[in-house]
Image 1: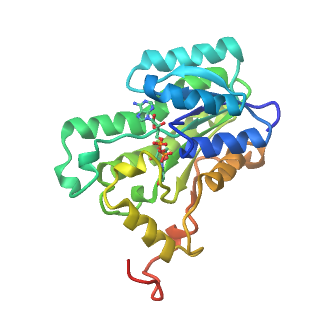
Image 2: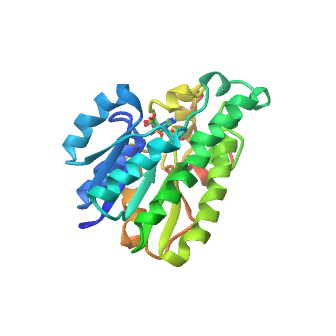
Length: 260
Ligand code: NAD
């Protein structure tokens, strides 16, 4: 990835999936820029950016289009072009990531869709203008988009829409040599995941029932992301690539798994 310049959105701390991706891209030679959401996270992201010699592209709250514009203007001035972009952003009210999907409020449904789904399209619109030589866009999804999962609720609906937007964006941007893919990551203990009800149970369930009999790490997601962001995957677009220790192929509980 030497000579490639990429924007990574969604680093909150050193447990973030976006951080695993940033480390892997850097290890493969890419130049990076990171955004942060608000002053509290700025303090965490700044030292991480320094570790990777990454540009700080500024504060970005995807509910405020002006902050997205500002980030891309900074990159235009600094780099003039962009080769890849990682969108590792999602949010929903914690109290609705528990219990029944049926109880989702209109307000939280709209907010969840805006932050966790539409924002990928919003950043793709800006990225297109900096990718005149082609590029690679990547977002993060979860198996709860494909199948019912306990407590995932409105986030599952948003991820299903996000996966559909990956396909539509891939078709819209393909002629310009811009590829659009998603990684469907297995459960990993991060700040965002801590908002999901019974998350420890979900982790254990995956560990006992995934073909590899374990969960995955942010570094494993990072290495797979580096493939999708590099020319190694130049023939791949519109893909949902599962990095989940194989859990998505499982149709039934492993009969030898211990009780949780
Ligand atoms: P994380 O908490 O480390 O990252 C989530 C990021 O979203 C944070 O950096 C946060 O600042 C950002 N964000 C939230 N609202 C925002 C807004 N309005 N504007 C800008 N940024 C905003 O958690 P993570 O698990 O690394 O999440 C990254 C992505 O991976 C998310 O899309 C998540 O759904 C997805 N994912 C996570 C798992 C898992 O088990 N952790 C599994 C599959 C997919």
